[in-house]
Amino acid sequence: MSSIWIWVAGLSFGLGAVLLVKAGNPGNYGFCAACHLRDIAGALGLHNAAMLQYARPEIFGWVIGAFAMSKVSGEFRPRGGSSPYMRFLLGMFMMLGALVFLGCPLRSLLRLAGGDLNGLTGLAGFMTGIGTGIFFLMNGFSLGRAKKMTGPAAAIAGHMPVVFALLLTVAVVTGSSLLLYSSKGPGSQHAPVWLSLIAGLVTGGIAMKTRMCLSGGFRDYSLVKDTFLLKIYGVLFASAMAANIAFGTFKLGFADQPLAHTMHLWNFLGLYLVGMCATLLGGCPLRQLIMAAEGNTDAWTTVLGMIMGAGMAHTLNMAASGAGVPFDGKVAVGFSIIITYAVGMRFREKIPATVTK
Image 1 (cartoon, rainbow, N blue to C red):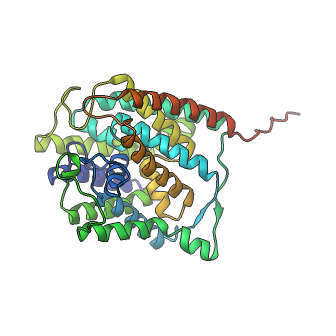
Image 2 (spheres, rainbow, N blue to C red; image 1 turned 60 degrees about the vertical axis):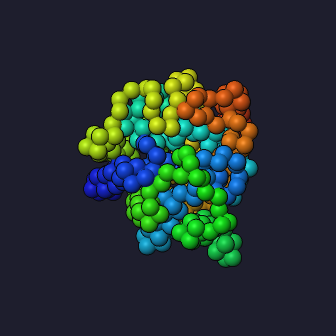
């Protein structure tokens, strides 16, 4: 792929995220697959955290934009059916880890670009988790191969994510009473609906075209020394930092950062869990959304697991806040890491021994 896409993707996500914050989104919160899905879960009534309820149009834009790009490029292919229960479970774990850190891998970079040094701790955990996931992959881990779908199954299952996105877009644009809306807190802070939707549409199409994925970038570099995806995130980080400095929203330090806490061990372990799950699932939260839009029902199952995980995390007091990580959240992350290790060891294909003459 042409190197021009490195600049197109990096600049659109980096500058777009900062502009969304300038237009009303919470600090360092222009784009975040995990937190946006958490807010959507709240808008659907899946948790009762009253300050975290808003159907974020950025997510719907990502799905619709990626769907349109996959159709135009001839890459929309309904497929799936490999280990759906495990994908749902790992999706829940991935969301839990993100909500203990307070952000997905994309937001960890955006937080760092805004001066939040807690992003460094999270990224260190994320890369370590990817390393653990790569260890399992190299020892034969597999959730099975997705199968091509045809006929009515393909028409229904493959289009479910975009239908879901379109329906919720109409609901949020019209202010439907079917959704819940925060009157204060992060859920009440958002850019105009039209701007969020356009930003999502543009970046969703670009993410589909470039296969954007931070866990995939580190994995590709580790296994085959391919730096294409990492270069995108490098441009993203640099452009977001430059924009934050220009707008006066750059604040260097650990303390008093927006939607963040300073419990370093749990920042590390939260994104460690995300990195490990993302590697086993074949993509970070952003990538799962984009693959779902392309007709991949395995990825859609993972996204549904993430939404359910968000609901559970806030209902059961496991999600972090600016005050830190509750005891139940610490226990849940530890338990999830152990279970993910067990999944990594259990779902292994036998690797044939090398025969030498």
